[in-house]
Image 1 (cartoon, rainbow, N blue to C red):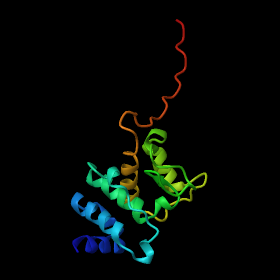
Image 2 (tube, rainbow, N blue to C red; image 1 turned 90 degrees about the vertical axis):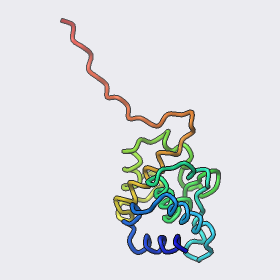
Image 3 (tube, one colour; image 1 turned 60 degrees about the vertical axis):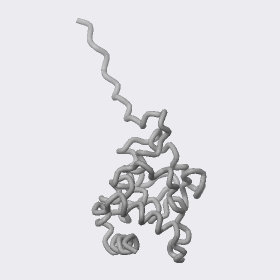
Image 4 (cartoon, one colour; image 1 turned 30 degrees about the vertical axis):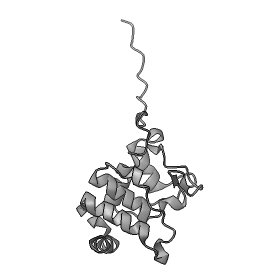
Length: 153
């Protein structure tokens, strides 16, 4: 019941996402997975494997993925849409800054969500997306700018 109240609070005031404890975030994810309300019927639950061992901020990002129905276009764990790229491994392809820009401004097939997400939601979403990479692969990095050649003296 507490998770339903926390979910209702988030719907009314999305900025409260930062106030969630990890247990509340997990409970909300579990509750969303079981709800059969028409509004949430299309929202795929974030697979448990992707939320285990995550920080509170990353769990809040998983909630954003679910509540904003990102998986209507993107797949995660082999389930979801095919309109956009799979989110598995996204952190090996895009840096934090690139993820923020993509979410806010869109590009390619993706619409811009800058007006639809609060800064707290963007921060949480990107924190979660940064966890989506195989354990044996490093995160994406911004290329080092080319340095001019050293002058011969």
